[in-house]
Image (tube, rainbow, N blue to C red; front, side, top):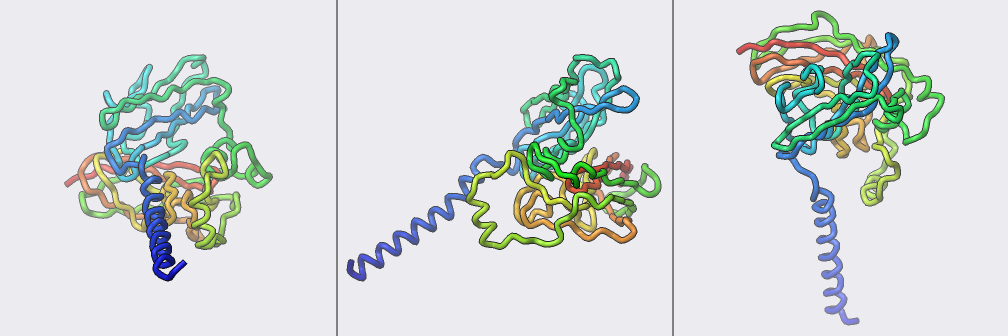
Length: 310
């Protein structure tokens, strides 16, 4: 082969490689959307309570990567039968949010269905909750479904894990003005299980290889380690939290500050377990802020109501 032919072959290979490197990300993003899509309500399962009642567990899949729809309780966000308002969110974080909230039903619920209906961006979807035995949830199911464990696996560490405890210091109802920050303190305690990953052991080469492989497990992968997250649960607008906190939703991008991201590491916890956070509101109205303490396997939630004026 002469030099010209060799040069042409090299240029052709380089062009093919460039096309491949450009096309693969486009193919991966072909069925993803930043906005304009619907939210899929999800029934996660149920668990019994000591008094004989039951809790239905719900989450959702927001098909958007950026849009955070606001859907007040009413004709587009309701439960049936019975009260339309069962404490469901009206502010929806992006992507998959598992085990987001629970609804208590009485001991005589029987084989009835509780239906959550959402209509977002013109698309109506429903989630149907029942007490069928197949939907019974325990701590191992939660850890597995959220990615702390592989499906159908457990360990002495995971079986001994106790959920962290989140306590909001001070009043549960606050007041604020638009554009002005309020501060609040959250105490988080935990048993240290599961053991947190302290440093990354994944090289750049391994990450590149992982991106080209099919999933090795049927559930998502999550990094174990204690973290606190605050977000909007109900409210008419966005809230900015400082310092920025890890995301409680499954953002699998590398630099997403999410436990589901491949390079994420749990932040250092304060020695006294007290987290100082400020919140700034962009619009007036009544907000419910949602805090979650998560150790990777299990979680505990807390809430603050804030009445915001101009």
